[in-house]
Amino acid sequence: MTPAPRGWPAVQVLGALWTLPNTVLGIVIGAVGSCFGARPRWSSQELALVFHAWPWGPGGAMTLGNVILLKGASLDLQCSTYEHAAGRCQHPLVRLGDHERAHVYQYMLLGPLFLPVYVLCGGIHVRNPLERAADHYAMHGHGWWPWWVQPSRENPNNSDKG
Image (cartoon, rainbow, N blue to C red; front, side):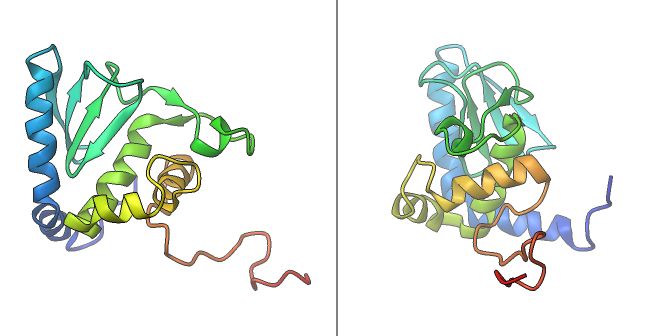
């Protein structure tokens, strides 16, 4: 495992403070779920308080700041990417926790702007660049921010002419 870059803990603290309004919202909603059986546990891997066995919703998970509301018992659940589920391509299954960790990172960067940006980008939809980036991160371990330019591996010079 690659060691964290120098200064990474400070960046994490700043990001957690920046997204604190979202995290507080997640804790309040999680506390309501706790009255109906959800169990909170800190996950250092996901940098989030995870409410396991979230009692409502269709399945999967939802992230609010440094809080993950998990329908199931484990973030190790293997799931389809949004593109695969929409029938657009054949992706391998990904770990749900990796997808949600990408959203934690996105929240830490956007802070209180995350939810408005998420809605403006299309909400829960295959075309939402934040969801696509979270899927990319879950598949490859990098690329959680959708607007970083990453050169194509097939065309390293970004040329279509080969």
